[in-house]
Amino acid sequence: MSNTVADKLAKKTRKKAPAKQVRLKLVYIDFWSAVKFSFLVAICLAIVSIVSTILIYTVLSQTGVLGEIDSLFMDIVGEDNSLMKIIGFPQVAGFAVVVGILNTIVGTAIGAIAALVYNLLVRVLGGFQLGFTSN
Image 1: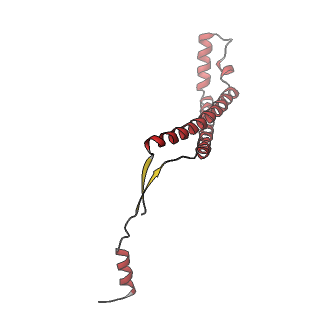
Image 2: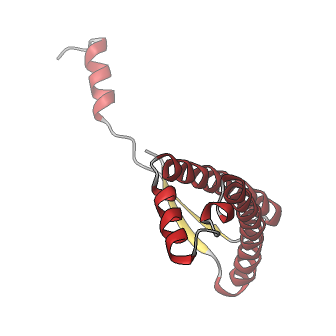
Image 3: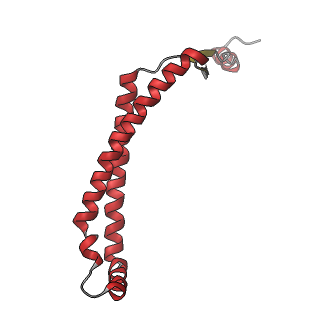
């Protein structure tokens, strides 16, 4: 029977520490934290939607798809009316920015309302019970 340091270390590594489990209950969501978080998520989604709208418009414009649609529209309606006057780049970018701002306002309001509703429902239902382990 050898009592070397290597044997002692091998015995220590064989023992697995028992995983401790903690059960927590989520009974309150801070209103201002929920508003700030939902605002940041809404800002991120607004930026993504604005950039993607501009990229899609640029790709459709550069590939000639919008030109073909415009010529088809002028053939149907008449040569005087051009679709590109209505859906030019400034109009599309402006519309994307307006929709992004509105989505930011609505997303922030929905996050605030969700926090309030959750806090009211917790009083009746008791909240979510969550389990965590340490491994």
